[in-house]
Length: 73
Image 1: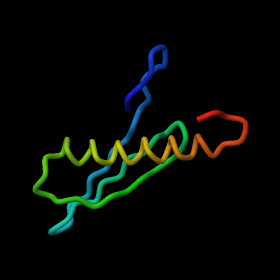
Image 2 (image 1 turned 90 degrees about the horizontal axis):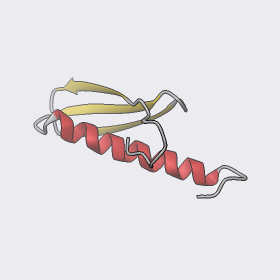
Image 3 (image 1 turned 90 degrees about the vertical axis):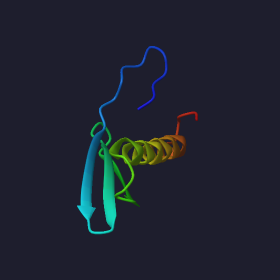
Image 4 (image 1 turned 45 degrees about the vertical axis):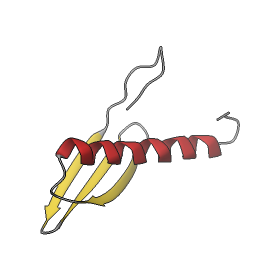
């Protein structure tokens, strides 16, 4: 995940499940137990699929953080 100065990097777990004509990609943030899933083209490189899942995870984490009372976005 991208990080701001002074912040430690966060671990992200990925799971890729290939099933005929699709690949199901999961990205999990163990610190918050947040998981996102997406479906991709199995012909794409693994790094491309992981980056897309990571972007989605970052979006969800930022969205949820802005909804938390008492915190600024």
